[in-house]
Length: 192
Image (cartoon, rainbow, N blue to C red; front, top):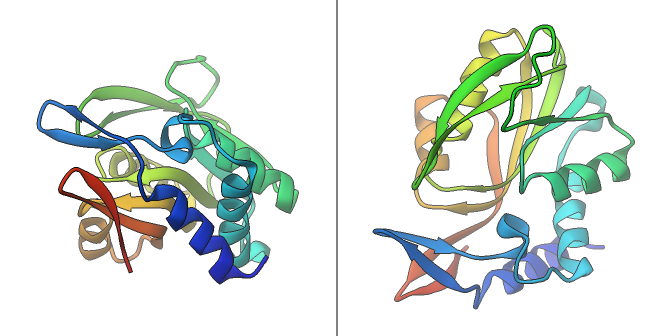
Protein backbone atom coordinates (compact mmCIF):
# COMPACT_ATOMS: atom_id res chain seq x y z
CA UNK A 1 0.00 0.00 0.00
CA UNK A 2 1.27 3.49 -0.80
CA UNK A 3 2.60 5.41 2.22
CA UNK A 4 0.22 8.35 1.73
CA UNK A 5 -2.86 6.10 1.75
CA UNK A 6 -1.55 4.27 4.83
CA UNK A 7 -1.01 7.60 6.58
CA UNK A 8 -4.51 8.76 5.61
CA UNK A 9 -6.02 5.55 7.07
CA UNK A 10 -4.19 6.11 10.38
CA UNK A 11 -5.09 9.81 10.51
CA UNK A 12 -8.74 9.19 9.63
CA UNK A 13 -8.97 6.59 12.39
CA UNK A 14 -7.78 9.18 14.91
CA UNK A 15 -10.42 11.77 14.02
CA UNK A 16 -13.41 11.38 16.27
CA UNK A 17 -11.54 9.25 18.84
CA UNK A 18 -13.31 9.51 22.21
CA UNK A 19 -11.74 11.75 24.90
CA UNK A 20 -11.88 11.09 28.64
CA UNK A 21 -10.37 13.20 31.39
CA UNK A 22 -8.02 11.80 34.04
CA UNK A 23 -7.89 14.79 36.37
CA UNK A 24 -6.65 17.65 34.19
CA UNK A 25 -5.22 15.28 31.58
CA UNK A 26 -7.22 14.80 28.33
CA UNK A 27 -6.81 11.15 27.33
CA UNK A 28 -7.82 10.12 23.83
CA UNK A 29 -9.02 6.54 23.33
CA UNK A 30 -7.89 4.80 20.16
CA UNK A 31 -7.41 1.13 19.21
CA UNK A 32 -3.65 1.60 18.58
CA UNK A 33 -3.12 3.14 22.02
CA UNK A 34 -5.82 1.44 24.08
CA UNK A 35 -7.18 -1.63 22.29
CA UNK A 36 -10.61 0.01 22.26
CA UNK A 37 -12.77 0.85 20.48
CA UNK A 38 -12.29 -2.17 18.22
CA UNK A 39 -9.59 -1.85 15.61
CA UNK A 40 -10.25 -2.40 11.96
CA UNK A 41 -7.52 -4.61 10.49
CA UNK A 42 -6.78 -1.94 7.87
CA UNK A 43 -5.68 0.49 10.63
CA UNK A 44 -3.14 -1.97 12.08
CA UNK A 45 -1.95 -2.90 8.56
CA UNK A 46 -1.58 0.75 7.58
CA UNK A 47 0.39 1.55 10.75
CA UNK A 48 2.58 -1.52 10.25
CA UNK A 49 3.17 -0.63 6.59
CA UNK A 50 4.19 2.92 7.49
CA UNK A 51 6.75 1.63 9.99
CA UNK A 52 8.09 -1.06 7.66
CA UNK A 53 8.48 1.45 4.81
CA UNK A 54 10.60 4.00 6.71
CA UNK A 55 13.12 1.77 8.51
CA UNK A 56 16.50 0.66 7.16
CA UNK A 57 16.10 -3.02 8.04
CA UNK A 58 19.75 -3.82 7.30
CA UNK A 59 20.58 -1.76 10.40
CA UNK A 60 18.17 -3.48 12.82
CA UNK A 61 19.00 -6.54 14.96
CA UNK A 62 15.95 -6.50 17.23
CA UNK A 63 12.52 -4.82 17.49
CA UNK A 64 11.55 -3.70 21.01
CA UNK A 65 8.34 -2.34 22.51
CA UNK A 66 6.91 -1.55 25.92
CA UNK A 67 4.04 -3.53 27.42
CA UNK A 68 1.12 -3.36 26.77
CA UNK A 69 -0.15 -1.32 23.85
CA UNK A 70 3.04 -1.49 21.84
CA UNK A 71 2.46 -5.22 21.50
CA UNK A 72 0.11 -5.22 18.47
CA UNK A 73 2.59 -3.05 16.53
CA UNK A 74 5.55 -5.14 17.71
CA UNK A 75 3.91 -8.36 16.56
CA UNK A 76 2.76 -6.94 13.21
CA UNK A 77 6.15 -5.36 12.39
CA UNK A 78 8.08 -8.41 13.58
CA UNK A 79 5.93 -10.68 11.44
CA UNK A 80 6.25 -8.44 8.37
CA UNK A 81 10.05 -8.20 8.63
CA UNK A 82 11.08 -11.51 10.16
CA UNK A 83 13.11 -9.65 12.81
CA UNK A 84 13.14 -10.95 16.41
CA UNK A 85 11.16 -9.03 19.03
CA UNK A 86 11.42 -8.32 22.77
CA UNK A 87 8.90 -6.73 25.13
CA UNK A 88 9.89 -4.41 27.96
CA UNK A 89 7.56 -5.75 30.65
CA UNK A 90 5.71 -4.26 33.59
CA UNK A 91 6.72 -7.10 35.90
CA UNK A 92 9.99 -8.59 36.96
CA UNK A 93 11.01 -12.06 35.84
CA UNK A 94 14.32 -12.05 37.68
CA UNK A 95 16.22 -13.22 34.59
CA UNK A 96 19.97 -12.80 34.58
CA UNK A 97 20.83 -9.25 33.54
CA UNK A 98 17.30 -7.89 34.09
CA UNK A 99 17.30 -4.08 34.45
CA UNK A 100 14.48 -2.11 36.09
CA UNK A 101 13.44 1.38 34.98
CA UNK A 102 11.13 3.80 36.80
CA UNK A 103 8.78 5.56 34.36
CA UNK A 104 5.97 8.10 34.65
CA UNK A 105 3.21 9.02 32.23
CA UNK A 106 0.97 12.06 32.33
CA UNK A 107 -1.22 10.26 34.87
CA UNK A 108 0.71 7.37 36.52
CA UNK A 109 4.10 6.07 37.72
CA UNK A 110 5.43 2.51 37.47
CA UNK A 111 8.48 0.32 36.94
CA UNK A 112 9.30 -1.63 33.79
CA UNK A 113 11.85 -4.39 33.28
CA UNK A 114 14.30 -4.88 30.42
CA UNK A 115 15.39 -8.44 29.59
CA UNK A 116 17.31 -10.12 26.76
CA UNK A 117 18.63 -7.03 25.00
CA UNK A 118 22.38 -7.25 24.60
CA UNK A 119 25.12 -4.63 24.51
CA UNK A 120 25.91 -3.59 20.95
CA UNK A 121 22.57 -4.69 19.48
CA UNK A 122 21.00 -2.22 17.08
CA UNK A 123 17.36 -1.88 18.03
CA UNK A 124 14.19 -0.38 16.63
CA UNK A 125 11.73 0.72 19.29
CA UNK A 126 8.09 0.84 18.23
CA UNK A 127 5.43 2.20 20.55
CA UNK A 128 1.85 3.34 20.41
CA UNK A 129 1.86 6.89 21.75
CA UNK A 130 4.05 9.60 23.21
CA UNK A 131 2.72 12.61 25.08
CA UNK A 132 5.01 13.78 27.90
CA UNK A 133 7.91 11.43 27.09
CA UNK A 134 7.93 10.30 30.73
CA UNK A 135 7.85 6.61 29.80
CA UNK A 136 10.18 6.70 26.82
CA UNK A 137 12.93 8.97 28.17
CA UNK A 138 14.09 6.84 31.13
CA UNK A 139 13.84 3.67 29.00
CA UNK A 140 15.98 5.16 26.22
CA UNK A 141 18.51 6.48 28.74
CA UNK A 142 18.76 3.07 30.41
CA UNK A 143 19.13 1.23 27.09
CA UNK A 144 21.84 3.67 26.03
CA UNK A 145 23.62 3.20 29.38
CA UNK A 146 23.49 -0.57 28.75
CA UNK A 147 25.46 -0.07 25.52
CA UNK A 148 22.53 -0.79 23.23
CA UNK A 149 22.42 1.13 19.94
CA UNK A 150 19.19 3.11 19.55
CA UNK A 151 19.06 2.76 15.77
CA UNK A 152 15.48 3.95 15.26
CA UNK A 153 12.52 4.92 17.44
CA UNK A 154 9.05 5.13 15.88
CA UNK A 155 5.96 6.17 17.79
CA UNK A 156 2.61 5.68 16.04
CA UNK A 157 0.81 8.65 17.61
CA UNK A 158 2.33 11.85 18.96
CA UNK A 159 0.34 14.06 21.34
CA UNK A 160 1.72 16.96 23.32
CA UNK A 161 5.30 18.18 23.38
CA UNK A 162 7.17 15.10 24.66
CA UNK A 163 8.62 14.05 21.32
CA UNK A 164 9.75 17.56 20.42
CA UNK A 165 11.25 18.03 23.89
CA UNK A 166 13.22 14.77 23.60
CA UNK A 167 14.42 15.70 20.09
CA UNK A 168 15.71 19.03 21.43
CA UNK A 169 17.26 17.66 24.62
CA UNK A 170 18.60 14.42 23.10
CA UNK A 171 19.22 15.04 19.37
CA UNK A 172 21.22 11.79 19.14
CA UNK A 173 18.05 9.80 19.76
CA UNK A 174 16.38 9.10 16.36
CA UNK A 175 12.79 9.58 17.50
CA UNK A 176 9.93 10.15 15.05
CA UNK A 177 6.19 9.71 14.89
CA UNK A 178 3.72 8.67 12.22
CA UNK A 179 0.80 10.95 13.13
CA UNK A 180 0.66 14.02 15.36
CA UNK A 181 -2.55 15.00 17.12
CA UNK A 182 -3.80 17.60 19.54
CA UNK A 183 -6.98 17.88 21.55
CA UNK A 184 -8.94 20.93 20.37
CA UNK A 185 -12.28 21.76 22.02
CA UNK A 186 -12.50 18.20 23.39
CA UNK A 187 -11.85 16.55 20.00
CA UNK A 188 -8.86 14.96 18.29
CA UNK A 189 -7.33 17.09 15.55
CA UNK A 190 -4.52 16.12 13.16
CA UNK A 191 -1.44 18.34 12.97
CA UNK A 192 0.10 18.12 9.49
